[in-house]
Image (cartoon, rainbow, N blue to C red; front, top):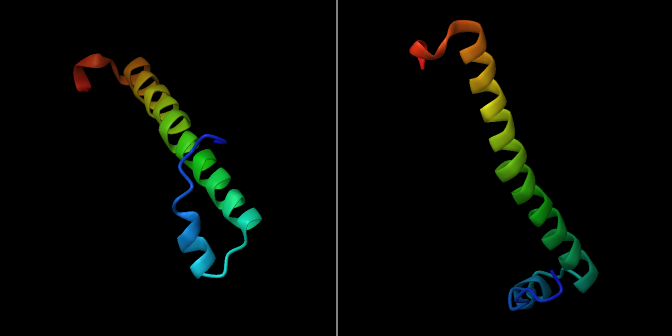
Length: 60
């Protein structure tokens, strides 16, 4: 994150958001992106495997 483009911080400043708060916004956004991408994919795959185990693969 240290090497990320910080040009959007100008918008944060215009909106009255401090540099530290902007850093937190970016951190939480990255955490959320990770959770939705990887944890969501994992849960989707686990659900598919569970349904296939219970009902068989011919129903997918």
